[in-house]
Structures are given as C-alpha cells and as structure tokens.
Length: 108
Image 1 (cartoon, rainbow, N blue to C red):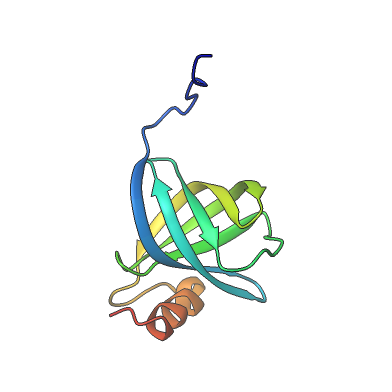
Image 2 (cartoon, rainbow, N blue to C red; image 1 turned 45 degrees about the horizontal axis):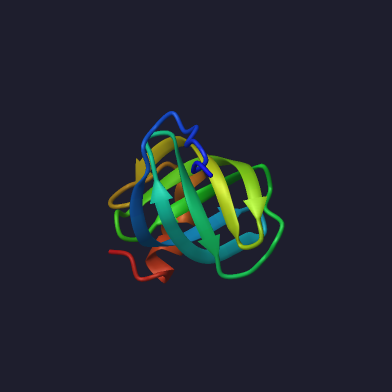
C-alpha cells in the first residue's frame, strides 16, 4: 500500500505554540500544531463550534492572525490565514480585544 499523497500547496512546519482563538463571544485557548505560509492547524482545549472567521493569537510570536476556518475534526481545526498584525505596541482599535487577550495570556 502506498502512503497517501500530500496535496498541500505549501510545506508545513511544526510549531507547538500556545494560542488563543477569538471571535465575538468566544475566547478559547489551544495550540498551533503546525503552520505554512497560507494556513495553520490548531488543537483546541475544548470541542466547540467555531464561526467562519476567527482571530488567532500566537502568544510566542506576539501576533494576531485573522483566519477563515476551513475544516474541523474533533478538537482540531484547519485555518486559512489572512492578515497578520503584531500585538506589541499600538494596535488598531479593531484588534483591541486581541491585545487584551494576549496580555491576559501572559504575552509581553
């Protein structure tokens, strides 16, 4: 039996980075398992329904990624990455909640 072919356009790199997922009325912790130039895979702490668009805070890198949820399977989710903004220093008002969550999670 031959192994399944990897159909990804971009190579993935392991990350294992702490993350917080934000959406209106939702703040959920998890781990970024791996990432590529166009997306990332998350493992959430709980199995909850996610809205179509979320913000993912990478605590280690101090950035917020605006992303679209592409798939869900149990506690894991695949996201297509949109814009990326640093949470260190001043942030646009639309990202104020992300900056607050970053600071609560121990980001500096």
